[in-house]
Length: 153
Image 1 (cartoon, rainbow, N blue to C red):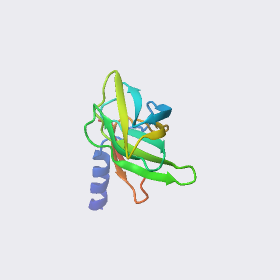
Image 2: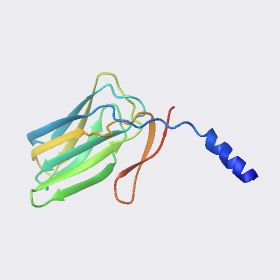
Image 3: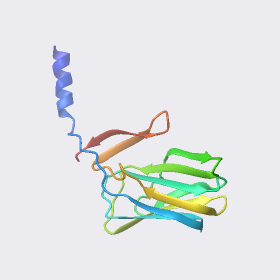
């Protein structure tokens, strides 16, 4: 009985979970003959989760890095790169959790290596571009980001 009461006490002592919701999304479509693709976001918020996708052609080009001037930590890969040999295109999803946030414009730049992309698109998708509140993300065994915990702090 004491063990159950202690378990209930610790469960109630945990911080309240914040609602996870989409804050904004943006995209840059079909840029041609490029080595970068830029997503322009505005007014990002401290501790949110930022997810960025990129597609490009040809598949010999790869993502070298994803940079956000306000978030100096690297963007880990969540999915990909995944190549489609039939269409000679590739795609990748990266993320940054616990971002610093900014007021005004926040440009996220995807830089390609291995040549020039003949076409490239990139963006921050729905349904979860930024997730409100502190979010811890990790990669599951299938390569997808898994939101572990979100608190209202």
